Length: 461
Image 1 (cartoon, rainbow, N blue to C red):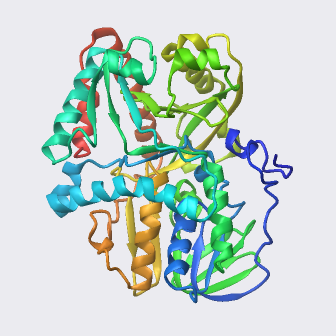
Image 2: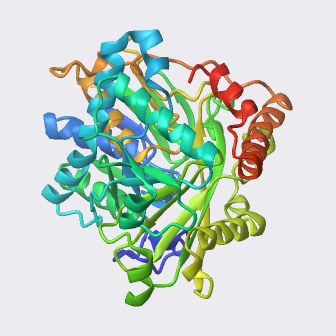
C-alpha cells in the first residue's frame, strides 16, 4: 500500500505493492545518448527496447512526478488492438497493405505485452479474455454490423472480430437490454499501474537511470533543461502524451482531454455468477461517448468513460480528476448495464488526461537532423499502442529497423496544430456535447445519429 503523497491517485495506485516513494531527482548536468521525457508507457517502452537491443546505450528517463503518475498508471486497463484512426484513413495516406499491416501488428502487440511482462517478472494481472462491445439499441446494433462487415472487407475474419446475437452476449456478460454485440480476442485486461511500475524497474535493471520529480523546463535539439541541471543527449524523446501541452512551445500539439473512472468494492461470488465476465473480457457498449470496463483480479468492476469538459487553454490540474457530475453518471450507467449492482458500494473515483491530436491520428517520428523524437496522441487507446510506439522509436533512434517499423502509417506524421483559444475550447467541448446528444437521440429513436456520422466522416474515419 503506497505511503507517499502519490497514494490515492487511483484504485490502481492504491492496490500496488509499492510505496511510490520518488526516485532521486537529477543531481546536475548529464551527458547521455538518449534522454526520455516522461516515465509512462511510451517513454519506458522506448528505453526498454533501446537497451535490450544495445545494453551499452546510455539512456536517462526523467519525469515531473513519478513513473506511472499519468495515464499509464490510471487508465481503464485495456491492453487492446484498438486504434483511433480507421483503416480507411490510414490507407488513403499510406496504402491498403500498410493499413492492414498496422492493424495486424497491433493485434500481435497485445500478447507481446503479456509475454514481456512475464519475462521481466511483472505481475500486471494480464488476462487476455478479449473484449465485448454490446448493442443496447438498434442504432448501436446497426453500427456493429457495419463494423464487422467493414473489418471483413479488409481481410479480417471471425478470428479477429465476430458478431454475436443476444444469447451469445449473455454467455460472456449479462448486460441488461443487449440486442447483440461483437467480440474480439485482441484485448487483455491488466492492472495498468503494476505494468508501468514494473517497466520502470525492468529498465533500471538493464542500466537505465530514472530521475523523478524532475520537470523539463525547456526542450531543444540535443538538450533538455531542468531546474536541476541540463541533460545533453544525441536524441531527445518527448513522451508526455496528455501533458504535452504543458511543455514550452507545444500548447497546441495535443489537447488534454479528461477521462474519469470509478470502481466498486470487491463483489461476492453470487453477484459474479449473475454478471459473468468469467474470463475477464473487457466490456463496453457501442455508444458515441465512450465507456469502458473490466473485472479486476481482486473481484471489482473498474469502469470509466468520457464526458468531463476540456479546460480552457489546455490546462491540466489535479482538481479536474474528480467531477461529481461525471462520476455519478458513470455509476448510473454501470448499474444500467448490470442492475444487480444497484446496492453495491463504490470505493474509488479518479481520472486523468489523455492526448488528442487535431485529426485523431497518433504519430511516431524522429528527426535525425535534430535528434528530437515524439510518440503519442493515442486518444485513450494507448496501452498496446504505446508498446508498439516505443519499439518503433527505438528502431528509429538506433537506425536498426529489421521489421521496417518506419514504414508504418503513423511513422513520420505530424498532425496539424489545434486552433488557438477560444476556438479550441469551443471545438473540443462541442464534440463532447455532440456525442452525448447523439447517444440520447439514438436511445429515443433507435436510428443512427446523422450528426455523429457527419463528424466522423469529416475526420475521414
